[in-house]
Image (cartoon, rainbow, N blue to C red; front, side):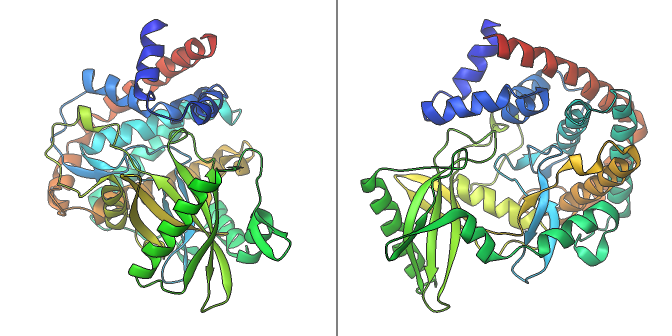
Amino acid sequence: MTNLISRIDQYNKLRDPDFLELKYKAMRENPFRFFRGSCHLFYEDLSKNTPFEDPTKTWICGDLHLENYGSYKAANSQVYFDVVDFDEAILAPVSWEILRTLTSIYLAVDSLGLPLKSAEGLATTFFKTFHDVIMSGKPVAFERNTVQGLIRRFIKSVEKRKSKDLLSERTEVKGSKILLKIIEGKTVKIMPEEKKSITELVSVWADKHKHQSWKVYDAAHRIAGTGSLGLDRYVLLVKDKALKKYFLLDMKESITSCLKPYIEILQPEWKNNAKRITGIQNLMQNVSPPVLETLIYKHKPFVLKKLQPQADMMNLKLCKGNIQKLLEVIETFAEISASAHLRATGRFGSGTTDELIAFFQTSSDWKSRLLKYSKKYAEQVRQDYFTFCQH
């Protein structure tokens, strides 16, 4: 117990204690949520027990699990479904990405109330579909007109969401002012001095980056995600004076990828970690969101994104225990993942598409080892989860 707890505490030691407690509370929810909040444990263990030699150099999300796929409106106003979290993104062996996703499948069946034996078929489906897309050498785009089934219905439903509804939910009128609403579990009030420094900083930044019509009126701490809880994160209320419209921005602190200590591949020299995150996101996503920027606050890099009513993570509970529906979703997730890797081949030190295909031509030799490791590690996560909860 002591070793596990010390590893978790050591990794999170620089985080805000109050928000870190929220992270630890979230991690106690179930083994899958614990897995999401302890990415560093997965890669530390994997680096010591890799199931086979993988020479590939691939741009990966780094924390790819079943709840890091979702929808968003891109710069071309289309709603896409894609990988949406790149905080841990890095140049790494492609099998490391697959192993984390497969492990998440073995863990997710618990939270979905499905029998453990169903995970084997889901994991096999994910690997086979991923393999087939890589072998085709052609990435696929996922928007409403190119997907079917549950994900198509999901995209259509989020397309109907309006910005005014998001603003109505997150803001309130006080006197003559529109301000952010403090919502339990979503936002926390910040001190006036900090609010003043953030609003002024982002307003000045916007003026220098061709957003002269933007003015920031309010700011609050934002609570979201699992792995990043405890890092500095804010939601900003902004008005585009030219359009006479308000919108919300997410401002999230960026730190070193938790994979970096365990990766021997030479990495590009990104200017900072926010540049790393946005740079890799631009490489891997089919089309990026309309606002994907970086800035420095208190000598720390942050990623700046627009909060969208269309942005949402895929809720697997929509499958309602239907294995066939879940299989279709898993197939789409695999196609999305493999497509993201293919888009980024041959860029900034990554291997070529031909090199990736050549590696996957040998996959019959290591497919069983991937599945075996993921299944076994899922059991380790369950044990670690119970140990963590007892602390």
